[in-house]
Image (cartoon, rainbow, N blue to C red):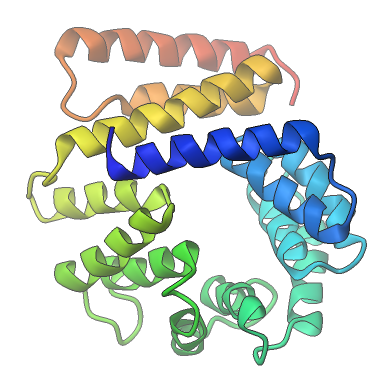
Length: 255
């Protein structure tokens, strides 16, 4: 396996053993348990845990609930509810607190209940990205997309995305794949890419088996429709058939 998947398997094993013997009790525990469930694509359980932590105004939980209600992770999309959570992040969070900078920076980056300000977002993310994989990932996207005064720059994009991936942000490897495609360049480590895809697919399958519903079936359909990188034509055909089947299941299932 790659460095990433080796680390994530071990981290997942340790976290699973921990939560099997420790039920969350405190606010911080509910937030951490929510993050654990979120990484496993068990979004409904994540939302339930975040909600328990948000009662005590835990900034990370408030922000994550805002995103869950914005994009429909583990719950129906409800922009009004999402807005309420983002408002709390902006009103209760302080840019003087290192832990809050990522969440406030993301609000400015994506315009969550505040006017977009990419320069301010960059500054906030830059203060925490050396230790925050998600912040480093977002910085990489600045140079993929060419945001505002940030010109497209493949070298800088790869620097931040690779750092994010090595710290555990799985979205970074798929962003790098898209980046290399945009520049008509082969991904430098195709095995790493395949392993990352397998790791994600396996967790979504597990989540769908544990909690069968339209949300997970649609996520599976999307994964199968994307397919393994550089897969054979025969396997690609099988994956497309699987995608069709999961889309049918989603159409006959509740949320």
